[in-house]
Length: 112
Image 1 (tube, helix red, strand yellow):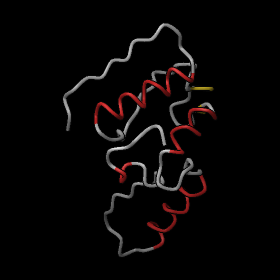
Image 2 (spheres, rainbow, N blue to C red):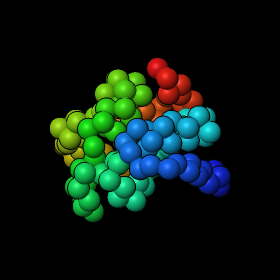
Image 3 (spheres, rainbow, N blue to C red):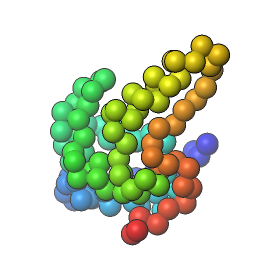
């Protein structure tokens, strides 16, 4: 676990600068991060909600294209993985990352 703190100062809060900040952070950390806390910035969050926040389509598209599958994971795909885990009573403990391969890629090139 890194104890580095990443700060990306910018003069305007736009989706483009939020994407640029994330890409710069990914380069700094030599890979993607599992958790991003956007602090309800309007450049990323359309509607804040503790359980069902809506993220801007531009931000989802940009981060999704970095995943191995080349797009964001859908709600249905996450639900299917949950159903799979719940359907097997022998499954007593498992951590499943459903992110389209984003965290498995390791260091990334944001320009791809």
